[in-house]
Amino acid sequence: MNLISAATASTSTPWTRADYLALVGILISIAGFTVAIIQINRTKSSAKAAEGAIKTTEGSLRRNYLLLFLADFTPLNAELDDAVATGDRRLTARALLSLSRLSSHLAGLLTLEQEQEDQIVSSLRELSTVATLTKKAIINKQDGNLSQQTSKVQSLLATLAPQIGALEIQSAATSKGK
Image 1 (cartoon, helix red, strand yellow):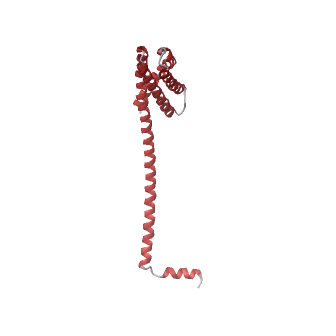
Image 2 (tube, one colour):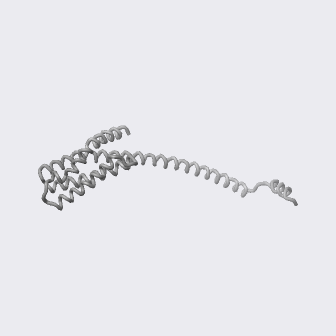
Image 3 (cartoon, helix red, strand yellow):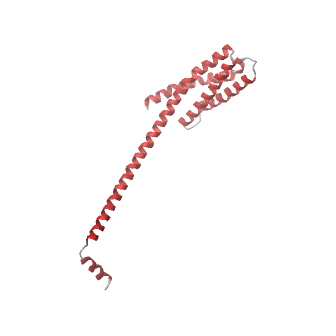
């Protein structure tokens, strides 16, 4: 018997119950596979939407932290001025430490937000370093004029104050718009 006559002979035999069950099994498998593919695509779309929501939330949180840190800048500047004016070395050192930390945090947040380092970030990093070194000098040297010892910090603060104010307004407007 050749191959064609064998194929014809097998199709002429009636289907058994097992043949029907096998066909139903194949159709159910195909349907299940199709449903699985559809669900995978839906999950993929949901994951992309969730990723977008996370990025939006992350940006909003960064802007809110930036607003909080920016709002602390002016009072810390005033605190340093008061500490220097009263000649209180301990309060001056504390204000310098706070300014150093705040400047460092602001520089980090701005770098994340802008994805580049610009002039204000460089100035904030410099302020952080100078404030830390000045605090150390004030603690190590218990005599000397506080006004002279903090003059470089005061100069950097005077330069940064208008930029910080503008940044605060810009950040507030951006947060309201998003």
